[in-house]
Amino acid sequence: MPEWTRIGNLTLVPMTELIEQNTYSIQDCINNGYLALAGGANGDPVVVDRRDRRMYYVSHELLWSDDWTELNECLHSTPYVYDDFWLALVGDPEFPWDFDEALRRWPLETK
Image (cartoon, rainbow, N blue to C red; front, side):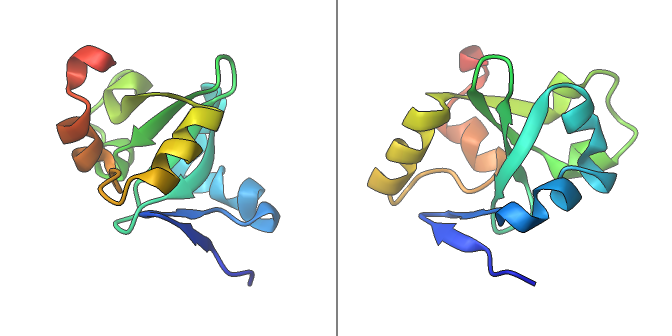
């Protein structure tokens, strides 16, 4: 099994595991246009919207529960598109590492 690469507070999904990581438990994300690329220490995936390249944190607790009706209830948008997200992550030791930290950093009005 390949090692996950740590970048700042997140770990990258190895290329050889992209399919596995985007099926099963987070199948709803891929079905709605989001691709998981990384994860935080608690298991919250970080996904890219394949349509506009915007980056999101996913609450795995919400996603795996039956307490949502639309996927966006489980997502929190960052202010970054793909390229800018990784640059910001590398340059900021306080960069959010999960859904809850992202909510604190970027309140809901950025969604």
